[in-house]
Each structure stands twice: as C-alpha cells, then as structure tokens.
Length: 94
Image 1: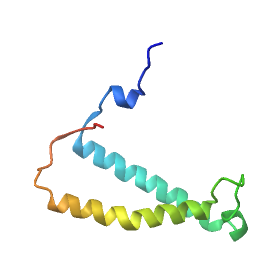
Image 2: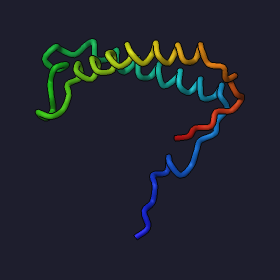
Image 3: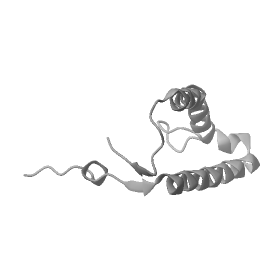
C-alpha cells in the first residue's frame, strides 16, 4: 500500500509577502474579536471542561499567553537580527 503524505507536505504555498501579512493581520483581528466575546461569560463557564481530559477556555488562554510570552520576543529578535532581506513572495516549506 502506497503511503501518501498530507497535502501540506506535498505542496508548498507561494504568496505575495504583503498579501500574506494582510491575511495574518485580518486573522488576528478575527481572533481578537472572538476572544473578546468570552468577556461576557461567567467564571464558571470559562473554567468548564467539556470532558475531563479537555482544557477549559481559561486554560487555553493561559497556554497561549505563556507560549506567546516566550515565542513572540524570540521571533521578534530573530527577525531583527536576520541578515536575510525580505522577498516579494513568500514560499512555505517544511
């Protein structure tokens, strides 16, 4: 039986860098708007786990914030210290 790789491994994406940045900004706005809707939920709902092994909304936010506290400054430092110049097109890869 032939093993097939997931589509993201088979193909790489090429997109104009500016278009990608605008798409990421829009996705971020959508995520922020969605996150803000949780302000109206009670503490009980924010801490609710649908299953015992699952995470609550607050646990998910805590996880994202903890990782963001590390990765965002790290990514920023790497971008600022990079000797590679931005390209017009972004090509994804593994």
